[in-house]
Image 1: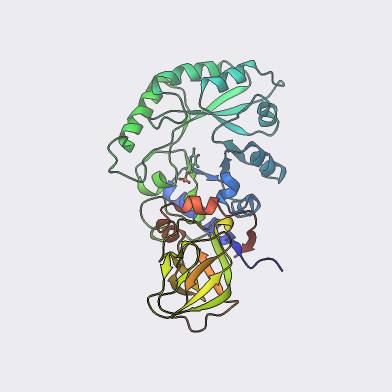
Image 2: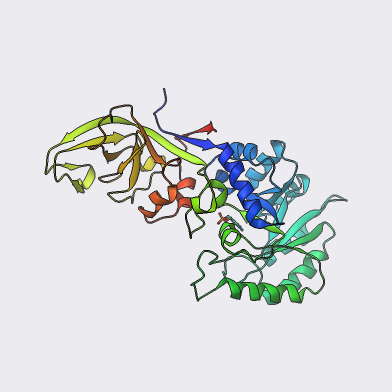
Length: 364
Ligand SMILES: *Cc1c(COP(=O)(O)O)cnc(C)c1O
C-alpha cells in the first residue's frame, strides 16, 4: 500500500469549468492553459477533460509534443514561443503555434530553413507595460513586417497579457492603460487582419466588455479564484481534492506543545491528529495555526509547524476522529484559496507544487 495521501482530479469539474470560461468569453474561442502539468492536475487528465477545447496552450515544448503524440489534433500554442533553434523543426513538424515576443526569436526564424509548404502560425506578443515579454507598441510594426517576410511564417494573432486584471484599483498599470497601448500597436499595423488574444482568467471573468477572439483560461479551469471573488461565486468547481489520513492521535495536557519549534501550545487538554501530509507533499510550510482542514468532513484547524511529512490538526471536537480518518487538505468542501490565504500565497502555487510522490487519481 502507498502512503495514504493522494490528489483526486475531478474530470467533470475540469469540463464544467471550461464551459464557464466559454460562457464568460461570449463568442470567443478559449485556449485551455495546461502549462505546469495542467497546474499540477496531470496533462493526461487535462487532455481527457478538455476534449472539447478550441485549443491547448502551455509553455513547455516537451508537453506540447506529448499532447500531439497523445492524439490531440486541434491547435497547440506555446505561450512563450520556442526557446532554441533546435525547437523549430519540432514546432514545424508537429504544427505547434508559437508566441513570438522578442527580436532574438525573429532572427532564429529568419535563419532557419524549412521544408517547402511549412506554415508556422505566430502569435505576436505586445508588451502592454508589464515588461516581461513582448514588443513595445512602437516596435510591433517592425516585428510584424520582419515576420511576414519569412515564407514559412504566418502571423495570425496579436496577444497581450494583463498585469492587473484582478485589481481595478491598481493605478500604476490599469487595464485601461494596457488596452490603450494595445490599441496603439493595432493602429500601427493598419489593416493587417489579426485575431486578438488578451484575457487570462481574471480578465475573462471580471472584464465583461473586453473584446477577444481567444481567451487564455488557466486558473479558472482548475477551480481557483482569479484573484478577486471566490471561485464558487463564478460557478467554478474545485478540480483537485488533496486528501490524506490520520496516522496517529496524541492527547495533550494543558501547557504541552506540538511539533518543531513548539510553536503551538495547548491552552487546555486537546486531541491532536497527525496527518500524512507535509511540505514534501506540497503543503505550504508557511501555513499558520488555524489554517482550515477537514477531518471526516468536519472543518477544523491545522496547529503547529508544518513538517516534511506531517501536519498536526486539532481533533478535540471531532469525537469519531481516529487513525485512518480521512483528512481533506483542500478541494471539495474546502476551497484551495482559503488554504492559500492562510499561507500567504495563491491557489496557483499550491496546485502547481503538489509533489511527485503524491499520486494523482482520476475522479468524477
Ligand atoms: C499562464 C498564462 C495564462 C493563464 O493565466 P490564468 O491567470 O491562470 O488564467 C494566460 N496567458 C498567458 C500568456 C499565460 O502564460
